[in-house]
Length: 125
Image (cartoon, rainbow, N blue to C red):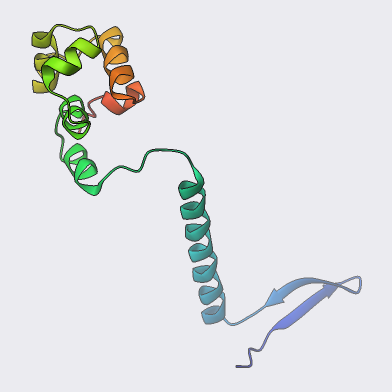
């Protein structure tokens, strides 16, 4: 496939390449795909935990992050409350949304669930 490209020089050195718009669009699409591949490769090289789609769906749907992560980790409320040094009733209130949880409580929960605190924050819609 032959593409007509015009080279514009300044002082004998190539400075610009002029090409058909369709070819420009094709090159831009290829560059975006290459960026996506690079981002994917970077993400896969990260030591971050791979989270199942079901967990992500529940979080995006607005379920309590504390409950979603607790259930994903296979813990009961009692077991998590003990690990986080929290009262089970308080944990229940956080999971149900009746209480937001203090930063101290969320820090303890995050540590007990091997998460960052921001993974437990409820996002306002």
